[in-house]
Amino acid sequence: MRWLLLKDLQILRRSPLLVALLFGYAGLVGAVVGIAVSPDNVASLGVIGQFGFQQVGVQIDDIDGEELVFDLDQWPPPGAAAMG
Image 1 (cartoon, rainbow, N blue to C red):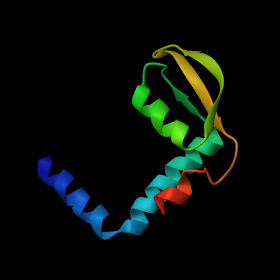
Image 2: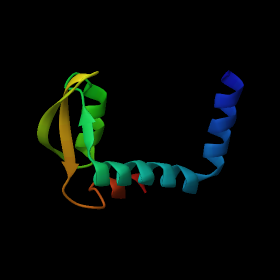
Image 3: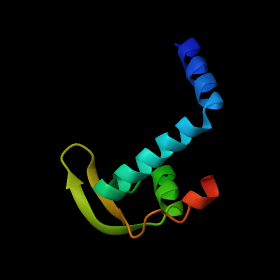
């Protein structure tokens, strides 16, 4: 298992374009679909805050309980320029 992780990291290190596409795809999905995060998930709240997501509501999930719902006001997000 550890070998597979190391192999994946080697591939990603050699392909910055692939890494950029992976991050871009995640941002696009978040922008189109929206993001729901548990209020207790401090790490995720910090990440989405850096990219300009604004809280637009609250929903109750049957499995996870209360979730904060976020949308993105603009594309590309303000933090995207810092990544490139």
